[in-house]
Length: 178
Ligand code: IMP
Ligand code: MG
Image 1 (cartoon, rainbow, N blue to C red):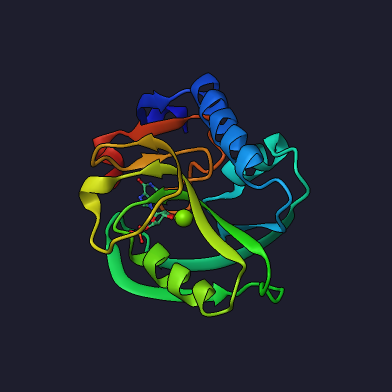
Image 2: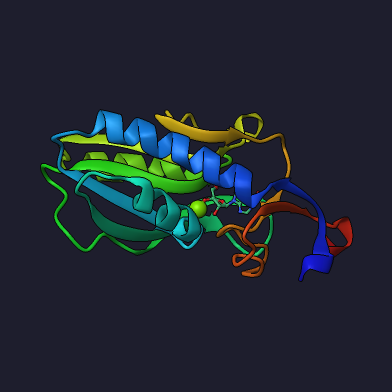
């Protein structure tokens, strides 16, 4: 599996410091709030796991599964929600936890869907942002790292469902895509 990686883009140590900075901001902003972390599966798992352990405030977890992706690296533009939230989020301060905002198609759809359910507040925290790829506007409240137009794997992110267990974020060798 490591043989498939062209280079490491964000090391474990760098991820730890990026995630710590995000948690510091969240710990500052959510004092006295009814914080609900909403993770977008499956990509969020490593990030949400590490981020939430650095959050020192009371919070609850919920998850959604939504995608605009097949097994390829390009969005299809159509969003499917295959697992919805399990609680009524009215009155909660919802913080969406996402691995990467790419075209913005998925998040744009999810944000509008969650807004309609009357949360007390709604914000977005993403580990990675690929602004050059944006097709739909998305407001990001907490952002870990800005990426160029590159497809990355590891730390929850996959290519054809593989590489999610890598502890760092890396770029795949070109031959893997072909
Ligand atoms: P969007 O709707 O195009 O913004 O797609 C967002 C989703 O596509 C992310 O939550 C990821 O699951 C996936 N995605 C986008 N870019 C990458 C990448 O570089 N590597 C792995 N997954 C990605
Ligand atoms: Mg995702």
